[in-house]
Image 1 (spheres, one colour):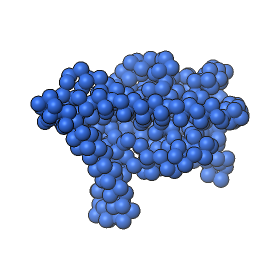
Image 2: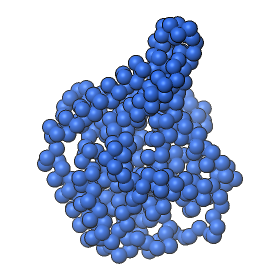
Image 3: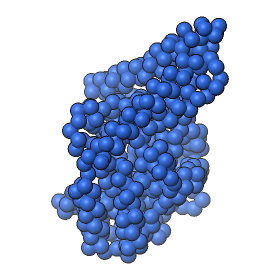
Image 4: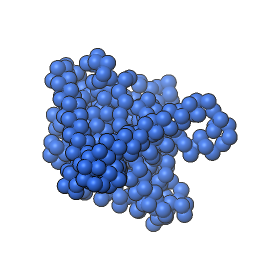
Length: 392
């Protein structure tokens, strides 16, 4: 069965195989309830959200035509930052998960949507939907866990280079969209050898990322700043208008990156979230997969506005259990999911945004240092299942 990453106290020791499969059946029932009512309400929600986001972005960019004026710069930058967060989190992320494919709208579909992010949607869907959600918090297989630049568990061998991981993580947070693009490309691994660098598939994907970044740069740092120049002439400061709008776009992108990075860190890194053995998920059943999502994710408590601004990844537990359900439904099913945790005596990890961010960063700093005591040995008392025994 699924094995936790060398824990002193096993939080699932009290569960029998029958309990675990029953958890899976009860979660399937919750999912079926949502599928039975999913429809026009959900379609209206995402269409309304797209309309609000686009109006906010257009309005903010219109205000930034007057970026030479400090009040306009501040107002436009705030509005553009919010618009970029909404586009990335509540709209792009959820559409690319296929949450709205049921609408059969070719304009709002996981196969056609492209987002305002350096990582091409096609590549992100592979690394995120197909790999991260399959190998959630499996050390060595889920690259979202530390993005390949950080030590994420005490059982990983420490090296002096890990002392810098708080700095690496901060830089990654500021440049998050580019970090994700590099991660989707497996850039470090593919550049490490001539054979991988020369691989036609890698080179094609690299060119795709290059085109996407070029287009994003031209839009934010050339085209829109250029539109501010005529207004700048009217105020006698065309260069100030150009560079003011450029700076506003840069700030909005960094704000979006920092916010997205923080939300995602809160989802899988705070205290209480479990990690799993690399080889232990062989033959994992549906109930065991559900259990791993429950123990490997954490929520953020807060207002409805908080949930919208996080793309409802403040309900990361519910998202990992049901990644293809409309995210706006997570708030209504969260009490049922939490009740299931309580029924089976499992810890539902949640907390305010500031607390979860602080907990995640504390872990980054702690794991930058060598272990205070020797790493625990692997518990081999429960052998992994044979692949033939898998039910999923």
